[in-house]
Image 1 (cartoon, rainbow, N blue to C red):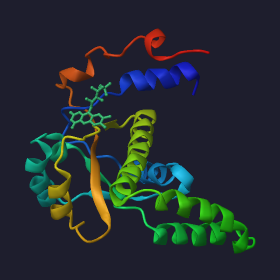
Image 2 (image 1 turned 30 degrees about the vertical axis):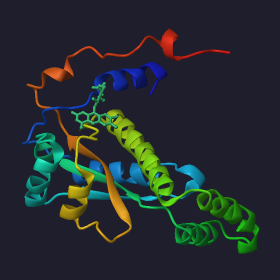
Image 3 (image 1 turned 60 degrees about the horizontal axis):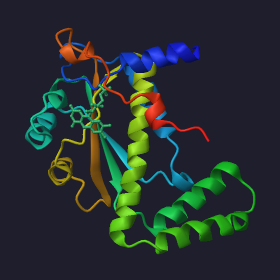
Image 4 (image 1 turned 120 degrees about the vertical axis):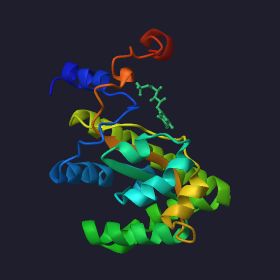
Length: 212
Ligand SMILES: Cc1cc2nc3c(=O)[nH]c(=O)nc-3n(C[C@H](O)[C@H](O)[C@H](O)COP(=O)(O)O)c2cc1C
């Protein structure tokens, strides 16, 4: 793909308001989308998230009133809920160090400094800050998800217009240590969605990018 072709893909993508209910994302394409979520980078590499793919139509109907009644939640082929570790804990750092050692080998003691740095970082934050930090990481996953979707011709609608506490209840997240942060319905745009043709509202490059 050339740089210009990538920009064309980003022009093509938009926050889809109306999905074609009849079109489903094929299983192999969906696998790639999940792989791309797994590959999302995070601060320190801690991956403080879970992604819930809601297939069950009854559950999606239950989520609708907690989504400002945005129809994408029920009409899209797939619905991804991005949940964050709330709050990030020392145990997450321990688990990550174990996983790093298992993946890369070597002497686990060599990771002590890195571990100490991460532990120091989270110990300087209170619980709310540690939850906010994890939620910020979930936004990176949302960005990766949207870019992947655009690259492979899948439509998506990033969504903050949801009631996370109600999502947590419906999805059974209470007590799991994870909390709903965002939702992202994905699928194929309906030909009637007028937003697909609306020109993008973006500030000019010159007003938001400074070269020093
Ligand atoms: C974090 C985030 C949350 C958003 N929440 C919603 C939402 O709840 N419902 C919706 O229709 N669009 C939502 N949007 C879409 C934005 O309104 C949209 O991306 C923006 O207006 C730019 O338009 P475009 O994405 O079509 O280029 C959200 C976008 C982001 C990045």
